[in-house]
Image (cartoon, rainbow, N blue to C red):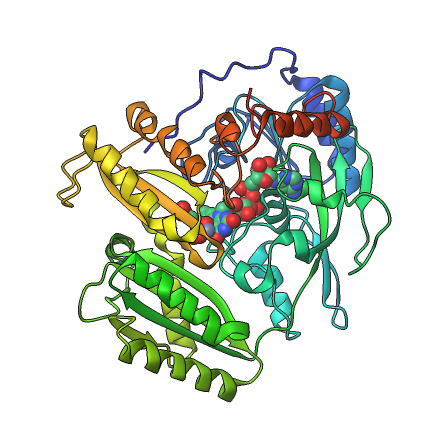
Length: 493
Ligand code: FAD
Ligand code: 2HG
Ligand code: ZN
């Protein structure tokens, strides 16, 4: 489908439209030859203007790619003085329309800031430029027996700065916790060009406000993250993965309870997806086969990681014996080697790509109490069927083809996705705000991990009180009083 612009969001007329003299300044401030892309090269500009889902589209006419913090500082200082709006962009894999311009804001891409600055194998602290790609960092650490404390399907493109700016969760949050715990410090450039160290790369530092926490999940609205120090754990020596088929969502919960009690300290991921997700992955991803002989409505991927293979193997096989003989699962398979481990993860990690290939893909990333997790998917199916947009019998005769649920069950995080042939306002209206009302009723959150961006900004009140939002706005005034950083997003108007 073609991405749409957002004409109902009115351009803030106080932002300057950039001119030749601004471009001249940028070219002078950023030394590398490919550091400034302009509308003279429209094909090169295009990917920076459109998001990963091809849903949101801007029309910036300049992309800046500095190579160090001093260049970022010079650019932001100039933009602040001249009221030029700026969108920070990492790997552009964000799923809420936060990483692309709404109108003609310039894009400041971190692509060329990709140096690994330091790794200390005693403390496990890694310090790197914000533009380092997550997978590159993980490969670097692997050689030294360490692992990045987060992992996501977008690891080949997303950058650590983008991960921190979105407070990305991912597939191993269950084991290593959120970035609020693992990020030790960062360097940021504020809107006025000041370069500030937020903390030190230390485990313990109780001197003053922990300002880095404000930047984790700030989605480019407070300033630009230019470097990150993060605590990397030892890479587990033994990793096992099993895929299990379960006949009901109650069964998925029972299994989770049992996995937590019996696998306890070695449990490193508990992911689930429904049958339709598997069907779509099989359809779109070459080489994916049916894991079991019979269909089941739910699939669970369990990963264990530890330092002693014999110990983990023994624990996991006792667990699998029990769940199979007690009928907690319908079927199961244990990966026998690293290829099979990768194969099982591949099914889970390519769900997003498969959904995107269906056409228009409406994504909702929700925190919901675990017992209610899948009922939200069913409520959405009912709702769309009642307005004639969805056929529950799977005949796909409605305009919404699929309504699926999957996600990080271990973290109470549901990814509810809908697919249709293209983007349409009436489908969007049938989903929102209905879905957010359901989530609010369950005491959940309208964004578990993808953030607010452009898509969820108008609905923030379903998760946060007016007083809370006022405090957020006050914080914004401290860091970016002229409002040049990633405007139109994050805050409800
Ligand atoms: P971008 O998309 O470029 O930017 C995201 C936001 O951060 C924007 O608001 C941008 O302005 C801001 N930003 C980026 N870099 C900086 C910076 N240096 N300083 C200040 N602001 C900045 N998310 C999860 O949480 N868990 C998942 O499991 C997960 N899986 C995914 C799988 C796929 C296939 C895809 C496409 C996306 C997935 N995501 C997931 C969503 C996405 O949030 C992450 O991919 C990632 O954290 C975004 O990083 P990025 O570098 O691409 O940032
Ligand atoms: C995942 O967990 C990502 O795979 C993407 O957060 C979720 O596609 C989605 O909705
Ligand atoms: Zn996710």
